[in-house]
Length: 114
Length: 112
Image (cartoon, rainbow over all chains, first blue to last red; front, side, top):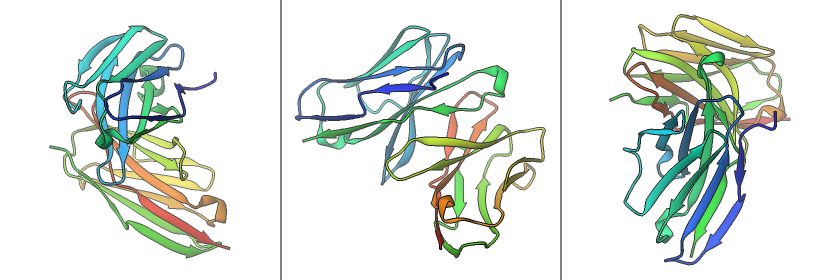
């Protein structure tokens, strides 16, 4: 398996623009998580899905953030409009019961909003 | 609210030394605990996963222990190598849901 695949690896955008981050979980995994990592706050859970359904989005910082999972093999995290304080590394991870719900992380998307 | 603390924040050791990284958590009602490694500018690589019913897990030179009652886990690295230099993160998943709380990490530097 190719693991959790995220795209793009790097994104530089101007303040006010829309940003879409993409994630393909490991096939067969039924949980998908979006995390954000910054130096100041470490790793923060933004939202997670079970069987494509959002379960807990309490970590989503503002209404500017939205996430979707239209099918078991694809999820997006959208920021609109983007702000400089959104600059961070965004990770996607997936998990399933069969391996004790251990996490497998993608390589992350480094977002810079200027 | 679960809180995860890792001590020390940074550690520098000479090559070949055995070392212990510590992780503590405030709520013992956990589902599992996972140790990760993160290299600079990279994603997280899973090292060891310990279920709540387990006491330890081993992989190569790594051994992780779990003591739920005291809210502690340790990651033991034997015969450290320069290639072990990275940040090591501890993550605790609560039983009440599937939120996993991460510690801030221990930045390890192994000198050749």
